[in-house]
Amino acid sequence: MSFWTAVVVLFAIASITWLRSQKYRAIGDRRGPGHSAREEKLEHEVEALRKRISVLERIATDDRRSSDLSREIESLRD
Image 1 (spheres, rainbow, N blue to C red):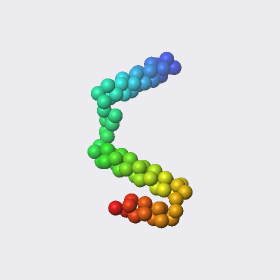
Image 2 (cartoon, one colour):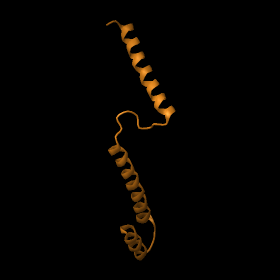
Image 3 (cartoon, rainbow, N blue to C red):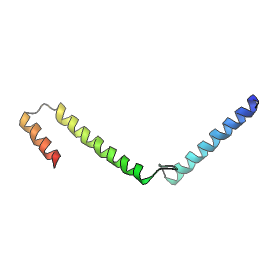
């Protein structure tokens, strides 16, 4: 395979990839091919965990009395 043949093949691959990404962006499908319902469920779970971590970080960094801290922890357990 010559150098220019390799350049043309790489350009074709990049063009096809770009066109597919534009297609999925246009139809509003962020997931793309091969994205299962399980992965979507896991993404929602990760987002919920991120929110909980941010709450815990806020609790840990606030200069509150220990009673306020224990009350917030108890409210998060519910």
